[in-house]
Amino acid sequence: MTYYYGGVGGRKRGDIIEPDPDKLTEIGVEVHTVRDLARLRAAGVPGGGALYVVEPLGPAAEFADDRTIYYAKARVVSVYDAVVRPTPAQLRRLWAKVKA
Image 1 (cartoon, rainbow, N blue to C red):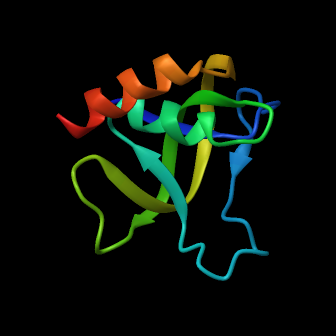
Image 2 (cartoon, rainbow, N blue to C red):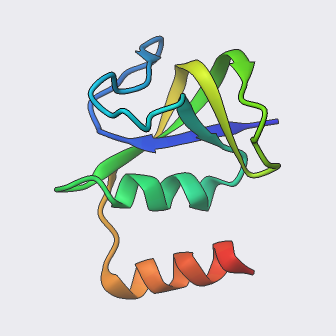
């Protein structure tokens, strides 16, 4: 299975992604099995984010579902899309796809 992460750009292969300690609600690294869900997360980064293929590290959270899983950490396997900056029309299409 392929796992995706959408977030801040600038990461490279081998980088470890960890939860943001400044966010009290952060329970783990949000990893997706659906690429477009991760792309939406990347789109929410001010100025545009990036989309990565990742390897989850550590145990999964108990409340994970089949599309979004929280892990203790994740390792960047590759950069899928270095800049995610969709137009409003592209965002609407992405939302429609992930809701289906």
